[in-house]
Image 1 (cartoon, rainbow, N blue to C red):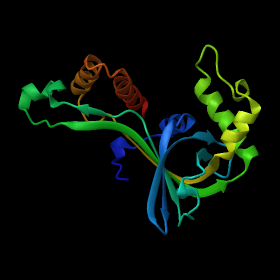
Image 2: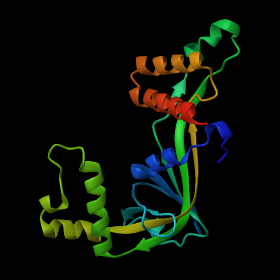
Image 3: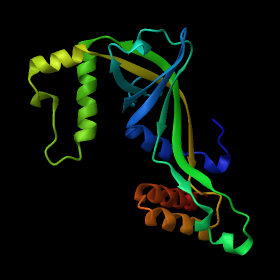
Length: 212
């Protein structure tokens, strides 16, 4: 990934992305070419030297059956947003502005390990459920469903584990613009109703201000 120094994500931003990766694309290089599947992942910091991303695929998905050649890749991405040059006060000053796109993404590389093991997969499903039900007033748990039903569901999926070897992460959130232009971006995103992207820009500016 091309990462200019002013858009490089720090360790704090990377840790935040890993703590809740959401649904991310698993990409593998196989004898059939590149294969990709969008999967929910959970991060296990204690697995291997650099932690691991854990997920599962449908048993009928051929991606887990075809050996991965070399490193595999998980692409994590936060919300992204179109940035209009009309939001920049500098447009009125000199007009030398163009549209762009803001985003935060991480390319997580590693060794892909397959877990065709109901006990491993059940533990994963419980961890995924606990992560995403944590904010619910009455969280659903695996034990809320009949045991025989859950057993059947587990037989239909296979676990995947990406043991992390390296991470490339980028936060392109208007850090190369003036303070006035950044304020215009935040206001424009809020007016469009994209509060999450506006919050990401604000956080990036705060992080940049704290750097020595």
